[in-house]
Length: 241
Ligand SMILES: C[S@@+](CC[C@H](N)C(=O)[O-])C[C@H]1O[C@@H](n2cnc3c(N)ncnc32)[C@H](O)[C@@H]1O
Image 1 (spheres, rainbow, N blue to C red):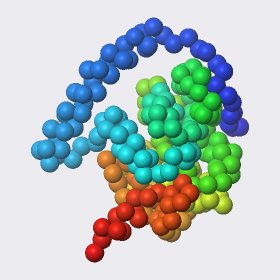
Image 2 (tube, rainbow, N blue to C red):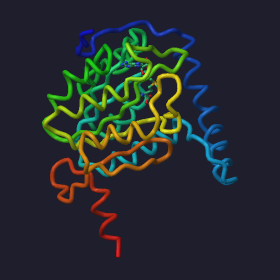
Image 3 (spheres, protein in one colour):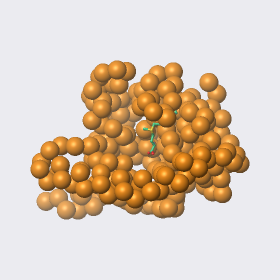
Image 4 (tube, protein in one colour):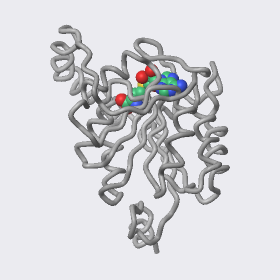
């Protein structure tokens, strides 16, 4: 399937229920889920952080990059991550397979020329997007079928195919953030965690990989942080004996 990359011009009607209830649900549910997460952390029970906490983790990781770095997301969904990344001032390219989610995102970001939305399967779309990235970017890989409003592509989970696309690129030092680490269990078309780690290392053996709040974070140490550098490791190094 050919991915479609277009400017944000559509204006689909959002349902009244969606636009009215969502902010109210957020006001109540977000603090509640954060409290539950905090409580389970305090009881030493391992649990997956809610979306709002994950957004803060992405935000803190992005702040370690120079301003102006491009952010490429797979699985736009409601566009919450895109909106947060835009608030930090980064340019976003986001890919969504589902036509309804894509149309909603187009509407949400219709006035923002720094959000490029791509409609199509992320593996096909990445074949077009990645060669255009001439400098390291941040990639948020989160496209997969997860019931409800989400779509499923040729594969329910395209993560390994997405990572394989990165292997053939000139730039192989993008910072990779892959969501839902806990669900990589080798079941139901989901690869297991080791397969994901090996696929990352196959792109570039210099990737350092860790899991932060259910997000797999893979970065290449760039000691010179002059251009779009990921500064985290230089500061960690300074603190090491
Ligand atoms: C878990 S949601 C993404 C949430 C979003 N990244 C965020 O941070 O708010 C997964 C999204 O991936 C989309 N999706 C599923 N398979 C896809 C594919 N092959 N290519 C692009 N998007 C896909 C689904 O329709 C869904 O919107």
